[in-house]
Length: 351
Image (cartoon, rainbow, N blue to C red; front, side, top):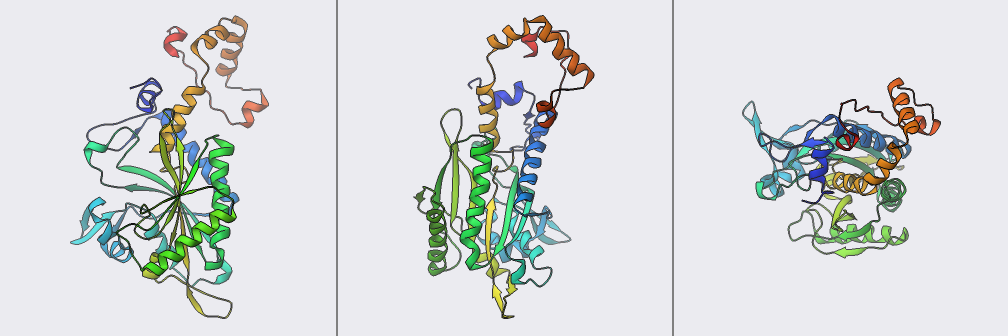
């Protein structure tokens, strides 16, 4: 493994570890959990600007839900099954079906649409032990999901808003160049061809109107709808799929999600799912690319050594940290965290 591989950095920086008692599940150390929580805080603030309402749904749900959603038929082999009071249930592999139930708790009006829910939900998916490798492929992950309930006329504008979020995250904040793909109907899918043709055309038109360059990835859509995939590259120039925007017409029909229009008529609404802008928040590919990128941009040891040789600067920094009083406005405004390594080692060992 290379020095900038996230598995090496995770150990050296005391970010995370793995243990065979929980294959494919991350043990977050204090330093890693700081990153994890800061990313969630970042997303919470961003989504609030776009008028999202945060929700949370249960981990274990009856197979009644999964049969309605279609996961029991199409995704069961990837789910962790259990039972409660002699009734079949499963640990959720994704958040969207449970979000449907929140929508259904009361009658909805066209005046409420688009209705945007945000969820930082923990999900579990079965993976073969042979494909588990660091954070590249995991069993337990946190999905920063957007659940958008909208009318047919609102689809394109909502996709445009989602790409504003994508731009803020990947380009403006983390400076990651990204590419976009439109993934179409797979061999195994729900619904009829006519519905799929409409959904694929709607996503394609939205991309064109937003002037976003993309390529078509035939047959790689989800079983319930086509999707737009965003890809970024890691330090080794490998491409990873991160944010996903899915247009799902199957689940609203299966759950009978309705709203009353201005003529007081009931209509089936559309569901636009934006799965994981940060891609499974820190439990997966985004974390890998972020950690490796930060490592590459850290000043070299030679430069650090040169700075630390300046005794006055070194003493000043130690004094500020010891007092816990960062006086410089830019540091305070950035809400930077302080950590003092007071071990009696050379700074080479501490670094």
